[in-house]
Structure formats: structure tokens, C-alpha cells
Image 1 (spheres, each protein chain N blue to C red):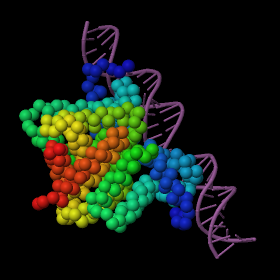
Image 2 (image 1 turned 135 degrees about the vertical axis):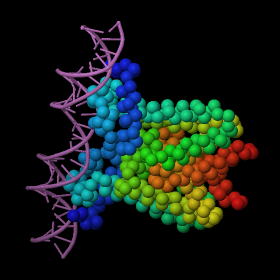
Image 3 (image 1 turned 90 degrees about the vertical axis):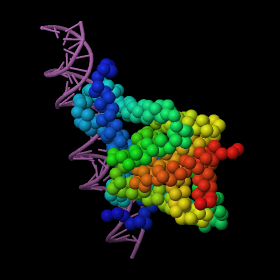
Image 4 (image 1 turned 120 degrees about the vertical axis):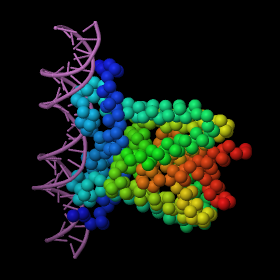
Length: 191
Length: 191
DNA sequence: CTAAAAAGAGACAGACCTGTCTCATCACAT
DNA sequence: ATGTGATGAGACAGGTCTGTCTCTTTTTAG
């Protein structure tokens, strides 16, 4: 059975796997590589995770959790909706500039696990839906719910596209910011 | 050496590989699967393509070529710039609705071949840069070049994001259209 | 201190991977 | 018809993959 959750090994495996998956992709990163980098025995990993796929889901959910907590803190700040959206773009801009940026792990997971019934696919959907509904909630402070829904979807698309461009070495986050402003202005404008 | 180009086998392999890569990803689709589906001998494939990676590049360039030809025809139509952009969104909307839609093959290739020096990475960059510069050229009919560059980048991000959303079963192309209109309006507006 | 839980170490199976090689067969042009 | 290039068929090598098993060692808890 899975060992007790008190062990710190489990989280260590998740974080090591995260780094390797990010750099090398999912199929291309083997279990042997993960256990070597994490410096654990193979059986230790398989006692914590029933399969590689389950480990991948765990890694994705771990990252989703971290991002969600960041959004939690943002929600409680006493700034305008526009400023909150700007913050999200700030985070992404810093991320794009970071040394070990390799694109969006969730988008990559979607590329390698395209079956909608696969647990990995569902983990990706959870993260993207989370960000979208968070942005929608933020925008509902300055526009009606239906418009907020559409604008949040548009912002998410911009962010995903900006991430892809950044991975290709063509930073366009500034253009994404301008486009986001135009979208929010149009959505919070007159009927 | 590679057989003469008069053979139709080569193109047949490219198209079969395209279908399989689209459905199953690149690393997860083996050579054996490709030659079985294409109904050719393994040596026939390796006589035409020196390696699997080179085949992948060929598949991507083949799709880039098809899309470029579509953009060529669009360029010659006597419609407004706004209508041309609308056409591009129309294509994507039909694509998203098609039965065997599995997301953007180029985005998937980027996910699996993240090394900027890899030929596959470069093939992806060619396609995305191509679409962006085409849209930029279209927009330069209705706005100054610097604004057209920024707007084209924003439109490309929207399209990439819309493709990702569509793959997750959440069609937001309508919202992307509205956002695109807002972006173009803002960019062709007053200084 | 002792007993139970967790982890280490490594062999192992069975499958899959890319790419090479050989030899037989086919199509086609001169 | 004859020779040449393209293809078919399948064995093969050498490696990697996931996941299992066993045995030993370490850590932890009472």
C-alpha cells in the first residue's frame, strides 16, 4: 500500500518529476531518470504512486495547487479588477523571463495525452478552468456576468498564446497586455 | 540514397504519419505503427527519410505548405482586411468542429521538442511566424506597420489560445472573434 | 529496546523503441 | 527481354521503457 503521508519522500519525488517533465516532456522522461535524479529506489516511487501516469497527475495537481494559492492571495488584495488582471500578466512576464522557462506544462500534457478520458487530460482541464473562473470572478466586479465570462475566456486565450510565443523565443506579453486592456474596455463599455 | 522523387510512396508516408502523429503524439507513435498503417516496408521509409525526426519535420513542413497556400489564395481575394481576418477565424472554427480535431500539431510538436536548436522546434517556428507575418501584412492595409505587428501578434495569441480551448472541449472561438474585433478596432483607432 | 513501517538495491520480465541488414521480388524503361 | 532502381518482408541488434519481485537495510514509533 502507499506509505503514510508523513513521509517527505513523496513530495520530493513530485518536485523532481516536475523539473524533469518540464525540461524533457512526459513520454521522453523515463522512470529511471526520475528516480536517479531524486536519488530514491524504484520501489520507493512505485510504493507511493501506482503508475507513471498517476505521478504525472500528481505533479500537475501540485502545480495547480500552488497557482491556486497565489490566486487566493490576489483575491484578497484591495486593488481594482483591472489591477488584479495586470498582476496575473506580471506573474507570467516574470515566468517567461525566468531561466528555466520551458512553456506551459499543462499545455504540454495536453499535447501528449489528448484523450479526454485520460486522467492527465482532466488534470489539465482542472487547471485551465480554474484560472478562467478566477478571472471571471474578478471581472464580475466591473461588468455583468455574461460579459465577464466571455472576457475571461478571451484573456485566458491571450495568456495561453503568449506562453506559446514566449516558448518560441518571441515575447509578446506586451502586446497581450494591450489586447487585454482593449478587451476589458470593450466588455465594460456601453451596451 | 533517397529514391527518386517520382515515387508516390514518400507523400503517402508523410500523410499517414501526419494522421498518426495528430492522434497519438510524436514520441508515442512508433515507426512500426506508421509503416503498418501506411502498408509499406520499414526499409522503404528509411530510404526516404534518414530518421524519425526528419520525418516529423517533413510532416510539419507539409502542413505548413498547405496552410500557406490557403493564405496565398486569401491574399488575392478582393475583400477588406477585416474580412480576411474573419476568414481565418472561419477556417479555425470549421477545423475545431471537424471530427478528427486533436489540437494544433505544431503546438504539440513544441511540447515534445522543446530544444530551440532541434529541427522540429525550428519547423514549428516557421509555421507560427508565417501566420503572424501574413496577418501583419493584411493588417498593414488598415493601420501603420508597428501597430499591425502588435495586433498580428495579439491575433496569433488569440488563435493559439482558442485552439487549446477547443482541444479541451470548450469552444471559445466566438469570444476570440469579439476580442479580435476589439483589438483591431483599438489598433486602427486614433493615436 | 523492539517491532513495524519505510526505503534501498538490484535483478528481472516483457514489451517496445529506432535503425540496419540481407535477400527476394516487382515495375519499368530502353 | 534485360537490367536497374524501388520495394517488400522479416530477422536482428542494442537500447530503453514500465512495472514487479526479493532481500536487506534504515528509520521511526511505542
